[in-house]
Length: 133
Image (cartoon, rainbow, N blue to C red):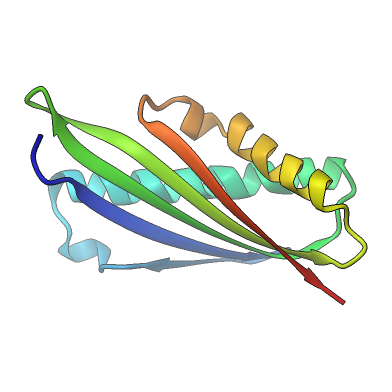
């Protein structure tokens, strides 16, 4: 196995607006790194959109969701593969929100994400729930 290539994309979401921040400029990337950047952005978008739908159906009040996806591209048995995707989500909710319910909704969003479900690589979810007054 050779040294893995990794790409990180950050997505910051308020209830109505989505912002993107990339670690490197997209135009400077070539080949598989560019594809990994698009794939990470797609995973982040899918997670956010899925969470929004689940939160709305569950009547969860939230104010901000920061989502960060890191993908790893490695050569396995002579073939380049996307082997790992780590989604880190930080959600701001009101202090009266049920932390167990919020955690369950975040996990459900990751589990139902169509883009992630279409990939062979390992998936990991790291969550942080921030309560505000």
